[in-house]
Length: 428
Image (cartoon, rainbow, N blue to C red; front, side, top):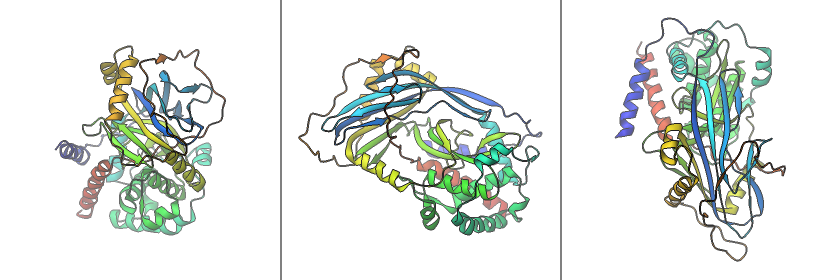
């Protein structure tokens, strides 16, 4: 029932949202929020001896309106490399492991209602120019526009332009940069590709041929399409914060590892550079930044999938058996649950209860050597990390990719919204 009510509220919000009488100025308003990020790993058995990374959002800046600062709070059995901003831990064949990190994250992004305003205006009128199209800075063009993939040019571009003409009644050449970018996002996210959650990325060729892909796959095709039109764009990677009832435990198995997400989901989405406003979100799949807050692990214009990296990721998840909990709390909730001083004992109780409360649908791996007792979380021995004495590690390590799944219901919500909007256009 709560999801149906949410759908109705979002539908009403977008379809009835008034446009501002005057276009906002060139400087985008910025809002800042504070979150706490928890990543806990509980391995019951490992068949490998290796040094792995435990992922966390990072210090991040994109333009002048997106900035994210990380402050380490606690770690247990995890080392932090201050120079590289990475957390690492060691697994040993025949043994288990338990460890976690807690980070404070202050993230500043364009004001959500402002970003939403631009999206709504562009959906209603793709010729809308919120700021004069004075051209893109040369350094932005050089970094964020490239020669598009041949298959995108041959297959996606004709399909998009045909769709655009049918919907709006004129050519994409007459659209503004903002209008063209939002229309392209509408087409890729909700029309051309059917959302299909996947633990590993697919090649652009496969995505275009099958017309199926997850948020990462969709965003890579969208970036290629925008490059064709000379519009700078990039893919933001990280976690979308979804503080809704029903999302306190989103479980996804990947081989022998069960991922548990609390009020968040790993996500990738496209940001586009608009002259005068810099970077704005055109995430019509999950509403990152313009509806839900987003915590960044980084951004990239890379659209090529390295098959050997994918195979390595899958092999890793076959080589260890366990669970990983990724939880995001807003500042008030974190203090209410764990106290103003962030009591580590309470944090560990939460980790244990949440992980043990999950059910993995995977099968335990067969150990290559004699089994040992599964790793058990020790009593509260966690200590705060003084920022001036953080342990550094110089050992090279291999990143353990997170899954790029997204809560499917969010895609369905936005899909219906756009379909209703398209229908209304056709009736005009």
